[in-house]
Amino acid sequence: MKSELSSKTEVKTVIYPGKGAYVLYLHGEPYAALKVNGGTKERMYMLQYRDERGYPMFDSSLAGPTPAGKLYVFKKVANYVSNIYREQTTIPMGAIIRKIGGKWRFEASEGEWKSAPAGVAQDLEESDLGRQYAYFEILKDIDGKVIQARWASNTFGSYPILLSRDMRRQAPELIHTTGELMIDQYSMLSVMVDLLSQPYRSFDQCVESADSISDIKGYFDFDRDPASGSINSEQSAYYKLYFDLPLSTEEAVHLPEDAVIANKIVKKQGALSGREEEVLVREGLAKRSGGRVVVDMKKIYGLQFDAYLNVVLIKKYANLSAVLRENWDDLSELRRIIASDMKSLSILDPVLYRRFAVELIMKRIGLKKLTQEEVLNDLSDTLGL
Image (cartoon, rainbow, N blue to C red; front, side, top):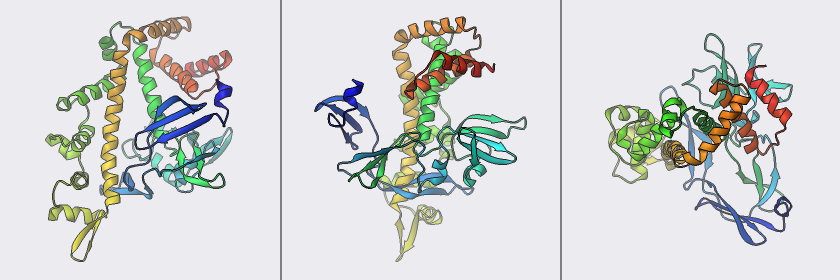
């Protein structure tokens, strides 16, 4: 099968961005299908962060619908550096960023350290809540300051596929997985292994014992009944706003006024009040022209898309909880194997085992071969031997 799939003449893929479908054809017949996300439905500026005033700051590049047409694989690269997203892509996905001699540096390749982009260096000095970029495996000193972390905000992940329309020039479109999505995968695997390594028989008992899955179950309960209030009020506020559900007083406090106004504009829920127009103009979301307020819809769609991303987060984890519950009987055999492995490897701490197991699973998902020697080295690293 590997040789057949390697044949350029026998393999063809068709992507339907609007339907979220990626179909692989082999010998002219459908062979496999994947779910994908194309470009956004509306042209928009993506919300990047909010400044100290709470005003939205947007990406300078427009995001928009994926154009129709025939595209070819132009090049497959690792650690692609983009001119548009240079700060985010200069650091390879998963690379170590470490404070050396008082300055932040990242490991560009084994043993080669380079200065981290200024924005990243500044971001690492912020508090946990103040950081705009995503990191994992964060290490702190005794004062709680970050001294080392791995980079998770590479816009194009590890292995983007560059496309072309004429096989001579690169097209603007890429096929890629964002760094944040890759870390979501890592997080979900960690949750799953945590659950499977619990010593109890029933799903509910294991959930109660594993803190990580208890939080995930909260998303499941909330998505099934938003009135349950089983997640933090900031996330539930955006969810209820997006679906026009009544908000509690606590939830309403967490919603920026511009997000509420954007939801009203996109859904055409009536004319804007003078107060709402003032907010949009003050934050650069609209301008006054000829005695009227002209709204920048590209930014408004960006705000609405940010609310949608909160909905995606909740539903993603709600689905994880549901899938684990539905497949609990089948997963029980895997749990038995995990318990046997822990005993044979003399790993008595479930937290250590989880780190070890997740590392192995992530390598397999990355299609890396695992030898017994490599597994033993990973185990030694996990145990600190």
